[in-house]
Amino acid sequence: MVEATLRFLLGRSSLPGEVNCLRQRWVRAVPRPVACSNALFWGDGLNPSIIVSLDFPAAAPAADLVGQLGSAASVYKVGLQLLTAAGPSFVRDLLDAGKQVFLDLKLFEIPSSVADAVAAAGQLGASMVTVHASAGSSVLEAAVASAAHFPELKVLALTVITSMDDEALREVGVASTVPEQVLRLARLAHAAGCHGVVASPLEARLLRNALPQGALIVTPGIQPLEFAKGDHARFTTASEAIKAGATHVVVGRPISRALNPAASFAALCAELEG
Image 1: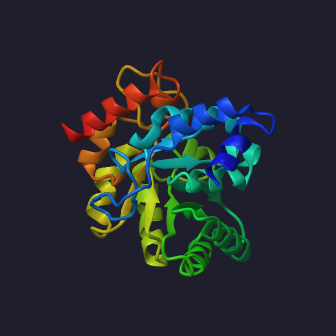
Image 2: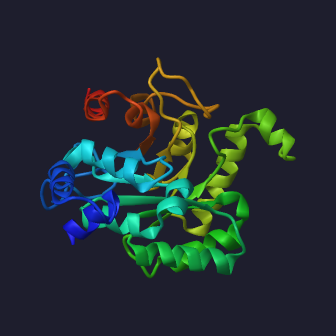
Image 3: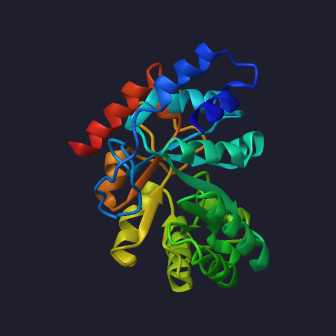
C-alpha cells in the first residue's frame, strides 16, 4: 500500500530509487496515540494542535512537504484547491501514511446535499469537515446528523472567513461587526450540535468564553509577526491564538514557503511549548 501510494504521488513512471527516497522521507513509523487536550487527533506528531495547510495546485508539491516534515507533523488540511486538483485519492494516501486530515470543504448548499457531502467525507476517513454557519441551522443540523454515522468525524462551522472585515460584511448586507457576527454564528452552530467552529484567532477568546469547554476552536490566519499577512485581514501568531483559547491553529505559508519547512515547523512547536 505504501509503495503504491508513493508511486501515485511521484507519477506512474517513477523509478524505484525515487520511490525509496520519498518512502524514507515520509513514512517513519506506525502512528501511536498522542495526548491532546481535546482528544481529537492521534499520531506521532510533535504537536497535534498544529494543522499544516496543504495549499498546493497539485499532489507532488504537497507530498514533498509531507515528506520534508516526516513524522513531526501528523495533521494536514486539504482544501478545495488540492482536492480539486488531486482528488480524494490524495486524502487516502495521507491516511495510509498515518496522517489525520482536516477536509476544509466550506460546504454551503441545501441540507440534503451537505449531508451527502459530509457522509462522503466520513467514508473517506476525514477527522474534520467544514460547513458554512451562515447556511443556517437546517444545514448545520443535517451535517451533524450525517456525521453521527462516523464517530471520528467532527463538524466545524465556519463563521466569518479571515479575509473579511467589518466593511466586507456591510458589502454583503450584514450590519454587525465581525466579532458580533462570529459570536452569533458560533451560538447557532452550537445549538445545531456542531463540534466546533472556525474563526480568526482574534475571536478565539470571545469564543472560548461563549462556548462550552469541549468545543473545538480552529483558527486559520496564523502568521509570524514578520510574515506578510497575505489574504488574511484578521491574523495573529500561533502562541497568541492558543493562549486566547484556540484548540487548533492552521498554518500554511509560514511552513510551506519556508526555506526549511521542517525547521519552521519545529520552531512553531517550540513557540507553543514555551
